[in-house]
Length: 305
Image 1 (cartoon, rainbow, N blue to C red):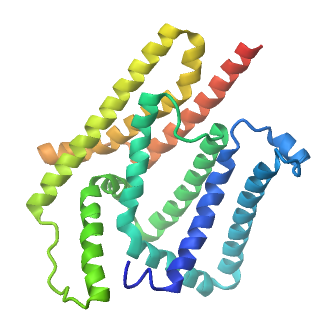
Image 2 (image 1 turned 45 degrees about the horizontal axis):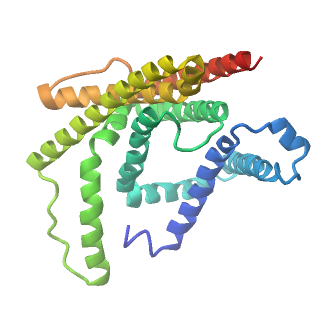
Image 3 (image 1 turned 90 degrees about the vertical axis):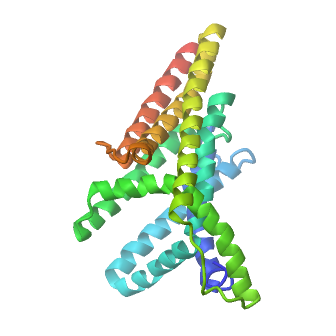
């Protein structure tokens, strides 16, 4: 990161490009409660201008990105390959930090379960359908990879689980890597002798981490049940108001428990296997969320009438 990333122009250009794409993905979700038909009928009105810019920006980025990839793939595959290599280089110098972003998504289900609301206001139908579309893109890319490399579904599932299991190792790698990299880059210290995470400490820290996650997600499910019970005592309106965030928190917590089940059982008993791969389970949860969103929107409209 310190020697091949931060001092180099390619790193910042790649970071800027990925940031632009990321914002294009999430921008439409920030139109919660907005009549998009009215926005595009009167895009220059003060109340509609921001939403029109968000939608047009997102559409523009994806049109340009899609056309660029298709045209380069047809007319200049070597150029496309050269551009994609920067993504690999970027991943190689930043991958430990993905665990830090993972902590953010791990914290959302318990937050929602105990507060009864999302930490940010999103257009739920657009966010859920957009997530499903991205899943289709992911499945297409993985299918091509499987066809070219004979990669089994079990190997893909293991990668998704490892992303959750190796958080303590990655956090330590960030700390140690920063200290040794800084000394190497700016003080010319000898880093030829480096101590990695040994077998015994690794097992101990991973066990502690997994048990902490299991405890948090179990508490999240209990929190959802308690919140539903309290809402039921307050009336039907309160249940409908809390249903969407609480169902999301419960489904997300169950997904994490599903992901963690095999690693935890393996560390405790030395064995374990899951029949359903995590990526397929995520698609099922997304479809459930879409069905729930439209179901509760219909209930709310009936109540208004």
